Length: 442
Image 1: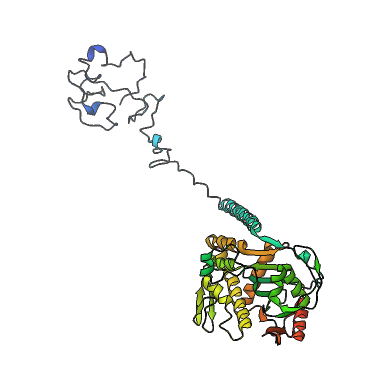
Image 2: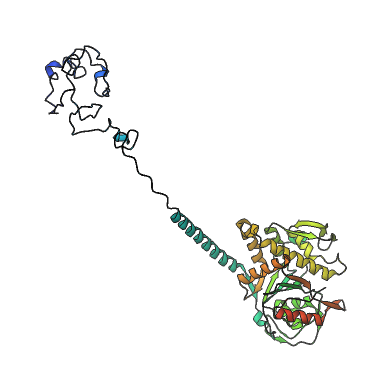
């Protein structure tokens, strides 16, 4: 190719491109009357030489059959000559698509720098912040939701002449035969009957301390003295007359406050918190947690409670669990065996509630919490932390880290069980001082 031509105005055509040489103007660039072939059209001929469609190249003219050499636009369409360098489309060098010299692609001389490494430390930090924030919000919301569901109906400030508090914390746990809110169908299904009023089916003292936890059952047929007390609703003080009666009669006479007063008077042990649960609530908790697995040493039946159990390991639902803890007619030592069954089952229930499969599963945890909190009646000073402490202590007792026993019995009078005064005093002293219990019960 000759020296580069200078691109002039559009009206100044190179030699051979005047209007007189354009013929019939086919293809605008051919001096022939026939159309210019595709091979000589600049937009499709990418700078590769090919045989002319007609005529050999003119010597020294750089054209084909009289067609002058087309002007070069700076190598824009495949020309390798000098030409006009004021415009470069980049198609020849591949720079438009990132290729060619300096494009970083195939054939390029400049490589793209490495991408900056991901800042994993920053990502982990923000992920941890988000997760922690969600946990805090969820925990706080759950706490206030659960706290609002507790029925703090028992005012222990109405209990008079109380013994001094000792070390550790003492809970009085009561299972009542309350049928409040139960339909006739539910009463029939759970074999509760339709007795009027409210009595205690089970009573236990749970001591939580630094030297192990102790669960002591108080047989409901225990012979006790009803002391002077202040009426829970009237506010009137009733003087004690030395009257002897069964322990569960105290609850029937004036409810939780008289029961606490009677237990404290007859044991000398200060009760810090009161927890009560009724029939329906107990069954609901068991069902919500998915049943409770226990091992029954000897099978038994009881038409009164609906119990019908075989020996061995088994998982009880709410209806079966209620029958298990209420049965007494199937045993020779009716009340004492029943309290042992109650201890065994309540400890197993607490263990089941506290397992990761329940605590870490919101589909189990919230129904269980809802069923439990809806059915519990506690004292006005009870907090969720106190309640959690109680459940974990019962879990420890079930796991062998604590002691479970009946109140020591020395005999009976008029069908009521008489406590062994010497053993009871030793037991109470050890609990007051938060010492390891050495006394054994029946």
